[in-house]
Image (cartoon, rainbow, N blue to C red; front, side, top):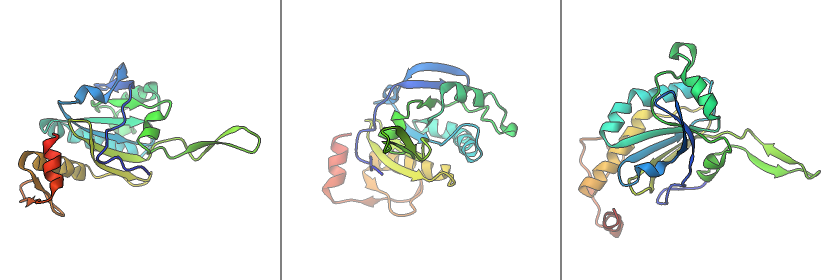
Length: 210
């Protein structure tokens, strides 16, 4: 599994569903460069069970993320038509109606591969035929990307393990705190807590480039 922290987030341009019902072409995270942080997360499949709980949980906190200058963007290897269809299904029927942040369609699976969260892989068998090992779907990867397009935090869960939206928010708060005050965040730090002064060159180097 690749560690993207400290590196430029892989770029892409793909179709996506925005505002819950509009399919757009050439959606890219580049639109947020210099303007917003991005919380970019992958989920395995549309029309499943754990995935809608996460999608709704991020939607429930969307206003809080936006207030802190964070764009929330989801992605799976399903098609944009599948995303759109699921978005029309009410929550009490297993759908994600009401989700308004963008959902990217990684139909050719290159986005998940470049973020190294694609569960399966392709290989040629002894007969020279192309075969897939495992399902070609995304693990539950989450990436916090700063305004310069650098990944500052990542976490990848296996399929059965849903993520904690409060922890994602804590990471946003920690990054913003560090950028604004130049203090690092100790274990279990939460917004409103004190930070620590870092005398190492890493902080000064980071601040000098942001």
